[in-house]
Image (tube, rainbow, N blue to C red; front, side):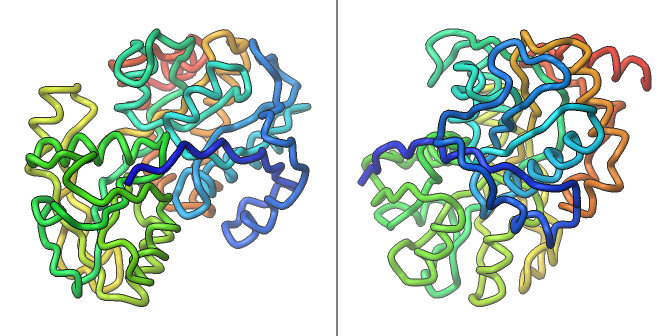
Length: 335
């Protein structure tokens, strides 16, 4: 079955400037913008409000984006950044294009499609990159009692490829197609976010789920703490996806012991996460945002370990979308 699209969640204002992860989610209960996105509108200028489209609370985008929002609000005079909980990459690109958000996380495949007007996007969107922030690892996860050990085993099972409008869904469908599975007809499709997928696996209403996220992903940490987690490898399909869609797909391993009970490395398809802005954002603001993020890595590490991957020497090496000129000035200054 295919679920209907889920609208973007209302923006949540992060109050205060504490960056500790333990404070982050409790800081997200403030003003509700009624789903309009708010923010600085098109052509955002320095010293104004910005809306940052992130993802669901069970993944990395939302807490990490919250840490970045707190940092920017603290360090950039007059700037207040709110985070918006969304279904992630596809939704985020559309929110940017409509002017309802001025910053967004997006996975490489979806960002490429949006920037070039391909697949889901019928025309190129007015976007640019503020840098490659960290890599997303594909997680195809289940528990030992399902007996699922390969992508081919998903045929005829109850599977969540990810929420509607997420990069997880895009990647999941492409992986299943590479494995000879029709993602619309050959599985019982339940499109849920990662936290909801974990809950459905725990109560037996879903057999397996897809998730593309940083390491570790909180919801999967929770599953591994209560059940015998199984990560299904996907790296064997990386070359096929790269040849068909672009070199934003490649293979790496989820290191052993990333999750409780995971004794061996898990080879997976990986794709870069890009911090994306509207291309009419003020160039000085682009530069200020980029500098603030990359020069405060230690503070962001208190929010999420994905911040370990921040590297200004390579962050502009994104071939499928133009780097914002203000961000490029910063990267050139430290290169």
